[in-house]
Length: 186
Image (cartoon, rainbow, N blue to C red; front, top):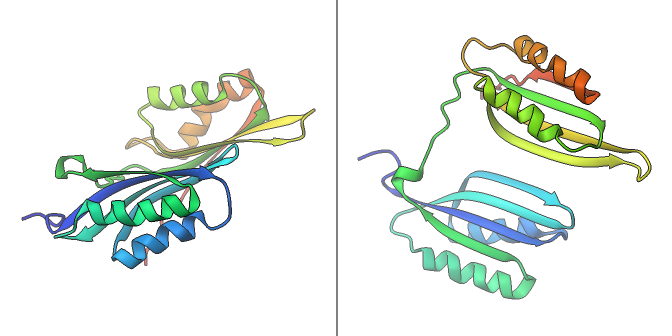
């Protein structure tokens, strides 16, 4: 019997017009039911707020209990909620073996920034674990910001990554920064 055999796993996706309290409302439901949040990502996209959560609960536990609680929240607040049971073969536990780094790109807004940077990284075997983009600045002088977290393949350093992205920096006329993220031991 594996370590996750006693746990039921669910993926929850929530989308709503942005407002204060979406995370609190969602996590209150999970807390009341005794669920544990194993992984999550939340962001605002335009005027919408999106969340993806992976939650667990000791078996036996019915997905219908989650559905009932979220249906009430949905009716009260207008959140769009999608629930999915995750099966054992869908559970992937992070095997971060290479160096973890943060890559930031700033420059004039133009098509192709995300594609060019992510293609260069993918071609070198870099695994992107998180990516966010934002348009900041003013309407007359917009600045595009790309922030991504990545795991470098074994043997590839932060310095190698920065050097590999140097030609893109010149071609796209953007600033690119690469720095290590040092995990903290508890």
